Length: 363
Image 1: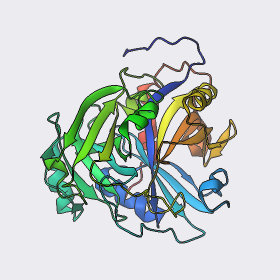
Image 2 (image 1 turned 135 degrees about the horizontal axis):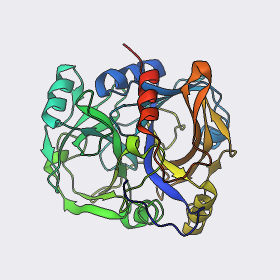
Image 3 (image 1 turned 90 degrees about the vertical axis):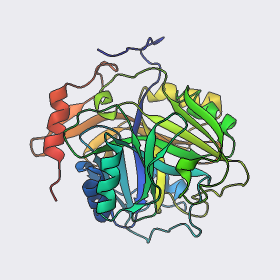
C-alpha cells in the first residue's frame, strides 16, 4: 500500500517528486534518439510544437517557436523534456560549464548494475568523464556527457517500476549549483520537501575528479523526501534526490546569464504536484513567488495540466506541473484523467504498462 502522509486538508499541496528535467538541444529529433538509444528513454509521452508564449519573460520578451518531446524510460524514473527552439539558433555557453557554476549541473540517472552501465556506454562511444567512484555515503556512480555538453550522473539506485530493460532507468535526481546552501535549503527542503539529509560533506571529492573543476573544494548536500509519496504516477517516478553543490574557493557563473530559456543546457527542474493554488500561496509566503503561471487547463500537445515556474535564490528555474490528462491511446482518444482522482491513489499497473506499450518508439 505504501506510506500515506497525513494531510491537514484535501487542498494542501502535495509534491510527488521529480517529473522531468528540461534539456535544451539544437535538434529535438536527434536528442530523443540519443536519450532513447543510450539511456532507454524511448517512451514519447508527448510531442508538442505549439508556440511557447507563457515563457516570453525568459526568451527575450517574445513568444518563440519550439518543439518539445517528453521522453521516459519504462523501467521507472523521471523524464527528459527535450526542448528545441525552432525559430532561432539556440545558444551554447560562451565558456564551458565548471562544476560549482550556478544552475542545473547534472541529471542523476538510476543504474541497477553500475559496471554494466559503464561498460555499455563506453562501448557505445559515449563521452565518459570519470571512472566509477564512491560518494561519501558509499554509493557508486560515474559521470558522462551527452552531445550537447550536458553532464549526466549514472548512479546506483534501488527504486524501480520494473527491471525489464537496459541497465539504466530514468532520472531520479538533479545536481544543482548554488551560491549559498543555507539560502537554497529554504526552498528545496522547507517548501519542496526534500528535507531528509543523506549526507552533508565539505572537501575535495575523488568521485568528482574528471569533471570540469571537479578537483576543487565543495560543500555537497544530498537530500531526499522524508515521506514516501503515493499518487497517480508515483510507481513510475519512484524516489528521488537533490544534490546541492556550493564551490568554496570560487564564485560560479550563472549558466543561463545572457541566454534564453530553451537554449543549450538543462533548462529547468520540474516537480509533479497536486493542488497548485495552495503551492502558489506557500511559495509566495516563503519568498519564492511564481514568475510564470499557466491557465488552469493548459494543453501541452496531447496532455493537459496546470503549470508554473519559480526561481531559486540563484535564478535557476523550477517548474511545477499538476497533470490533469495524459493520452494513453491517441487513435481512439483514450486518455488518463487525473483530475478528481484520490491524490494518494496510484494508477493501476495495467495503465502504466499500456502507456509503455503504446508509446514506445522503435529504432
